[in-house]
Amino acid sequence: MLASPRHLLSPHLSITQTPHGSGVLVSEPIDVGDVLVRVPASLCITASLARRTNGVRQLLEQKEAEPHVAIALWLMHAVHTTPSAHAPWLRMLPDSFDCPLSWSEADLSWLQKSPARQRADIMRQWAGEEWQRLLASPSHAPTFNTSRARFDWALCAVWSRSFQYQCGSDQCEGGGLWRVLAPIADMFNHAGGQPSARLEVRAHEGKPELWHSDAVPAVEDEDPSRWHWRREAVAADEEINGTGEALLLLARRPLTVGEAVELDYGARSNAEMLTTHGFAILDNPYEEIALALAPTEEDELGPIKKQILHAGNISSPYALNVGALRSDSDLLVALRILVATPSELKQYATAFKGAPLSAGNELRWRRLLKARVSSMLEYAQQFTDIHHDEMLLRQADATDANSAGHAELSSRQKMAVITRLSEKRLLREVLHELDQTRVDVQ
Image (cartoon, rainbow, N blue to C red; front, side, top):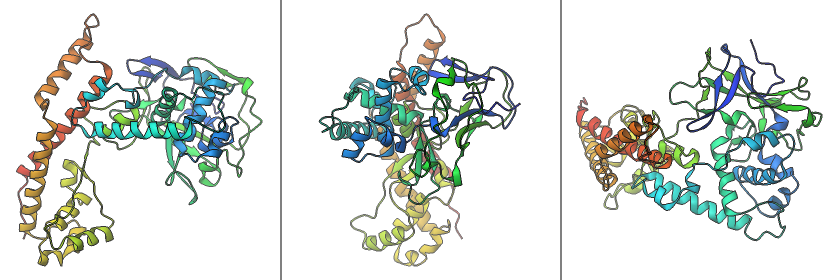
């Protein structure tokens, strides 16, 4: 049975607390295609809504801000003013998030030499500069809490709880992606395996980025006072009027009672997931490490190779994982071009087709990559090796199973260990792949 469109959350679902925060569980059986959440456009939070909100508008008129920053400013303002339509949801937001903006130096040190540490440092520096630019000394004095801590909290909320959707307009801000923070839909966690819910956006002419804009004004005939919120579900007394535009989450398959309903947050490495969401997955199928490659200064063909790669829209850094070595990836194209001899370079088009240039070329790029990856693994294991990290996680899991025990690792420390271990394992797997693969080129 389909959930009534007047509900934000299906009555067959409940919001519960999990060891890692809020989550959504099935309370009654759900069929494939059932509506799990329906958030009308007028309740969704976008950058254009932020720019129209009194108190936020004045700040954004003074300085330009990216969509995620504009939404963060709206959230800071809303926590202070508690608009009636969003007040129950705002009260459900946690007081803190685990994204590294809020990590201490001691927490960050657990990342060791992981690329996630560099990402975290860059994001922390950027957030500080953005706060200084927008809020440290604005000409229009805000009436809400604009501290650096509150700004970091709001950014982490937006990064970890908002959705991004492909724009339907060439004029869309945000690099072709439209960002929306949708109350209640933000409570669904990431699926470690197969997701059980999928996102669908219904918008006029397929352009959700026009929500809250002057072209498509927000629906005004939904009286927020008629919305009844409770812990398990959020419902309206009557059908939602207006355009019917909304963000929906639908069941991908039949769901049974007690099952967690989860989304796929996208193909993201642990370094990316940790820095925006504050968690990592030990066996992340999307794990990868960015690998910077370029012609050496001694290579006389270097300028030509750069031109060839640029013309083919192939650029560094490249995604390194075992899968990249088994497909016609950008990494393989670049490696074959970078080690090509003058005669091989004349056949560069072959590399773009995913085929070897020669047996010698295959051996050379393997030697180059093996040397780089070996060096990267040695660098990553300066403090602890794979065996030590695995032992730490086993001990932490054993302690977690004993509720009377004292936690060996905090949640942040455990996520840091998972992140650095996953990267070390990936480098080891790439080396194993290079050792096991036989070069056989006719």
